Amino acid sequence: IRAPQNDEPLQEESTRRNEELVAEKEVRLRFDDEHRDGDGRLLAYVFDGDQFVNETLVREGLAYVRLTTAGRRFGERLLAAQAEARKKGRGIWAKRSPPREASYPADPKYGNFHRPSCEESPKINAERLVTFKSDKEALEKGFAPCSKCKP
Image 1: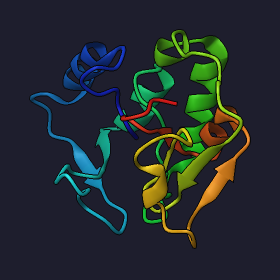
Image 2: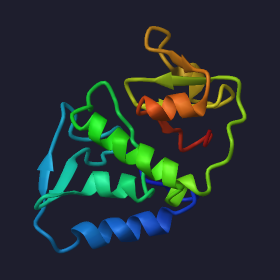
Image 3: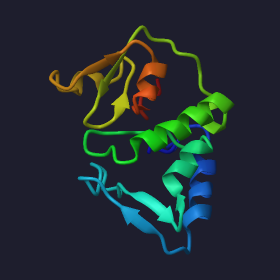
């Protein structure tokens, strides 16, 4: 998943809720192929007993689903939670702007989609490039909005 970052709406709420769910608790972590991202952040599915923390944050509208080629284990479950949050206008979905681009380039390796004008778009390897007609289509396929261009 990708939680809102520094200058994005609900960043503080997302961080606070994550802390409520995991702070001072003994949690169980499950991993896909990659254990850390390029910035050194841990990439894990987090469980507190039967509660799937990643799913809770997505269902509450406090994180986007971000599936990558290396991380799809709980994809269907997370996408269902995101669809529910979107339908009910929870969290980030209550504040999401309407789409403004004719298409959105994406990279399945990293699970992000971008505005065509984003500085990250030209960096996508042509062999991996996927183009979506709408942000809705990208979100339904498990791609998260780029934190730089915020499509």
